[in-house]
Amino acid sequence: MAKENRTGRADLRKGRYSQINGIYFVTTITDRRKAWFQDFDLAGMMSRYLHGCGKRLGIDVLCWVVMPDHVHLLVDIRKQPLTKSIGRLKTNSARAINQAIGRRGRFWSDGFHDHGLRSEEPLLDISRYIVANPVRAGIVRSVRQYPFWNAVWF
Image (tube, rainbow, N blue to C red; front, top):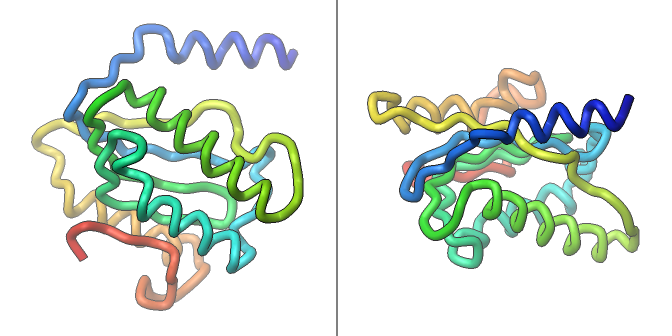
């Protein structure tokens, strides 16, 4: 059955096209949805990585939030396809986090979900939606109480 699931994921990627200078809302989850980022230090580490990863990955990270078992991003891809940029983001962050906690193995789940934004979709509204995720999840009452997010507009 696992083999069928892997084939299904590959089928989802068929025909996927990422446009250079396109803006994408991306969600990626931890392997088996383990809540690694409930740990303050790991959430902080991932936040620092997201804050500085854009230039290394050839993307502009416009907005992000680190949730206990997943990350939401709003990115503008610049130099390479989205799949390659997010793959590098996941590989590099997993390597750093695993090293920091002295473990080996998968950190992120395979793949990611993305939504290419249309020109009429307001970036500020989408950014607000992303950073308000901890409030909607009941983790905090106000975004001001949650330290693991950033956006170029705020």
